[in-house]
Length: 577
Image 1 (cartoon, rainbow, N blue to C red):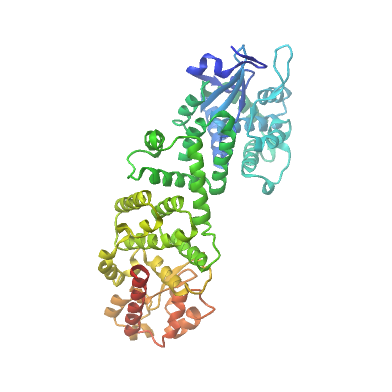
Image 2: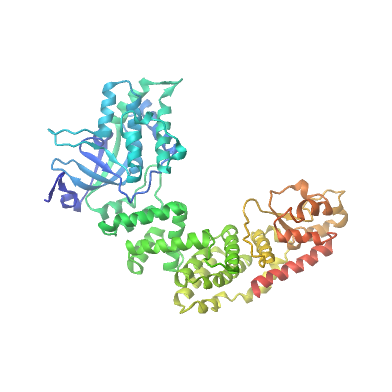
């Protein structure tokens, strides 16, 4: 065996090819045989108030019910370095949320107890003192990530640390969660402004002597992450991004692992875990170009990482490229060229991003941008892409059919030799649907259709496209009826429109406008001329589609029909010109 200052290297011991699982009490896990490290590739400390509260209450309930043991869950450990006596340093592959939280709870109890013996016992579990006769060195029981290391030492590991005041607003998210855990656990022991020393003493004894974990340890990094992929943190289900992060970092050579871990975490920090999971799904679709048949992790392992792309450095670089396109082109709506195309691109992709309720089009856009990143191509592609997805939305194709159409577009992009080939492909020829589109836009229940608001916003954008102004459709955007849905019986509206006319025209495209406010049925019922003054004039509304109403002196059957024709022709100009 290869010697080092700790004894032997974990990779050289029998555990390299074996997995060991064992049930262990907290007092034995937090003892001289174990020192823990949270590897840099792990996600940040993520537990929140509810997790801390539930953990404490579950333990307390078990204590009060006089149960022999309380199971805290499992942890997966990779042997990093080990001594001849079996003690060693372990990387926490799974369970860092739990072990970090237990450490904080032990520290809080240490700082609240008035028992000198209890205080010393708990500090011993948290902080290993040097003992030259036992061959142990001074060391913290758990090394958190470098970004939180100094903070964790000051406010948790050091005696009286949990009593130190700090201002949350100045802290990073993981640091805020550490402080939250301290606050939650401290408050649990206070009754009428004083520490309940009896409860505290009982909890210390119960946690150390009755709370049990199962540790699973292996000396092999790949084996550790194979286990990681099938187990969850308590109260913190593993996301797809966690599982793929594990699989990919395990495939990176050790001397490059930290760099690629930082790259992955930067993407996660920029986008958030939910958005990262979405991107991972996008990549799956771009690379496989088929309807999902298994869970996404299995498809990655069996299809993508089995011939399409190597896990590790290649995949993380690809993910980084996709994330940059998604962030810069889609989220920031930036095409990168200072022309009127820049404004048009910004406006169009913004309403697509914010008001199209499905994201399949983003997959196609990213795929195109990966192959043809030139800015001059991106806007032209976005125009035909929007036409394709919106027309299919209008005619009501199913989600399954939309997935099929997306995969057809991806195949066209992959096989193409240049961008022009993509633009001219038959996959974007939707002329056969023109009559159906006209019929649906003319429907008397247009307002009830899911695409109603988007079409009105697209019309508004069409009316503004020569203004060279970035349109920002943020906040509340409501669809309003000029002829109200429920006019008062003695109003101008009921005198102008009989019940049959109202049934026919109220929800028609020609009777609808947009307003930047919540619906107000009382205001909506006022007479037409007053409505123009209050809601439709310049300076009152930001929508060109709404300002146009002021050009009408009256609002009757003929007004709605003429506007219906005008709006329909505009939409056809957008999508079929």
